Amino acid sequence: MKVESLIFGIVGVFFLPVAIVYGFVTGWTEWVGALALLLCFGLGVMISSYLMVTGRRVGLRPEDRDDAEVHEGAGEQGHFSPWSWWPIALGAACAISFLGVAVGWWILFIGAGIAIVALIGWVFEYSRGDHAH
View 1: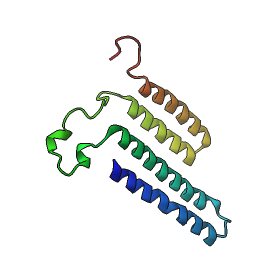
View 2: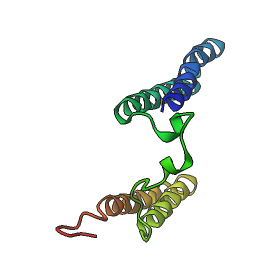
View 3: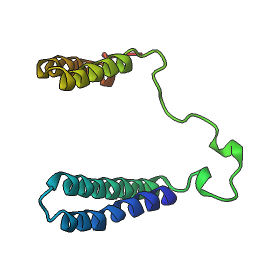
View 4: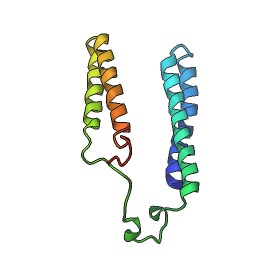
């Protein structure tokens, strides 16, 4: 994960001087752009530091080594819910929320309520007590 950490670190550090230059060019009168660029800096540094810490904890992966074979990356890659309907519900709730921003703010609250229910359902899908599947 050293390469990924380096890429996000470079991207993150790039946005700090860009934000400062943007601030001086606009005379610090337009705060949205400078704040967005500073948030991009923070996000890049945060992801880079997470990948760096995770890379130290996990160690070298097969894709990090030059002498790795293809079969070393085979096997289980994680747990994915193949028959879960909650992502569809969450996507629909986000669509309703974005519709609320465009049409009327009251629709946003309906979408947010559906999103909370869908997110809780997706997170706790496999936590329904003993021997849940």
